[in-house]
Image 1 (cartoon, rainbow, N blue to C red):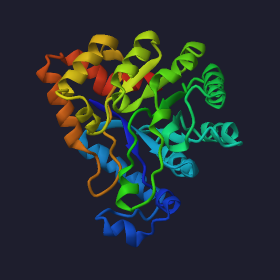
Image 2 (tube, one colour; image 1 turned 60 degrees about the horizontal axis):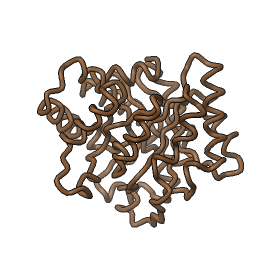
Image 3 (cartoon, rainbow, N blue to C red; image 1 turned 30 degrees about the horizontal axis):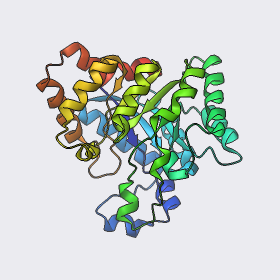
Image 4 (cartoon, rainbow, N blue to C red; image 1 turned 90 degrees about the vertical axis):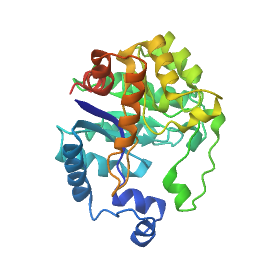
Amino acid sequence: MINDAHIHFFSPGFFAGLGADKKAITALGWEHPDSVEALAARWVGELDNCGVDKAALIASLPGDVDSVAKAVAMNESRFVGFFMLDPTREDAVAHAQRALDEGLRTICLFPAMHRYALHDERVGRVFELAAGRRGNTVEPIAVFAHCGVLSVGVRKKLNLPSAYVMRFGNPLDLHGHALRHPNVSIVIPHFGAGMLREALMLADCCPNVYLDTSSSNSWIKYTPGLTLEQVFKTALDVVGPDRLLFGTDSSFFPRGWNREVYERQKAALKSIGVGDGAQQSIFHDNFARLFGS
């Protein structure tokens, strides 16, 4: 049984927001979706073919909330909606409120992209919103915070500027928010994307912090001799199997669901002797528990 906590929904609105037309996308060998409805149906079929029960869909531009909201509304049993938010915008809280009202469940922060510190008071207002919503709904709201190295492959392929500032992506800057709002679940993707130590320090202090395992985790190359097996072993030693969320970081078609990521992680866990029960938690149960699915 598999749930995937990290899939990007590359909708027509997403590509339009990047300024990329159909010709530019097809030149990459990617498929340009005809509509949100068609893309949502394509993902449902892909999840069926790959044995994935449910997946998080991420609106990967602040202006593409409606695309994911529509996909989720059409397929509530298969998708959980995540959305990117820039908390430096004057209307950030109102924007987040509207997205949550439309049925999305997780607020995604990309501090390196939008250039703010995670301990900023504007981020604090986002956490206050999440905490308030969690207290007034049966559907829990989480905050996803991308830390460490940030690289957006589609922007590179389209030769778009990526003027990110990595110094803003320190997981330790979330400590105050995590302490003030212990009922708000915080998800740090890619094991902290190069800031594994800091992510584990935060998670060790704050039981509401989860790590997602998604992507190729190429940040491992920055630590000589480190392997994915060692990353998993260290994370399990610190937080145990109940706060790791499996994800692939899948995004475009025709590749679709990135089975290679799943198989590599499955092999890594097997090689360090992780049992079936713990693997069930990582690959399925933790996501189901977090989002009530």
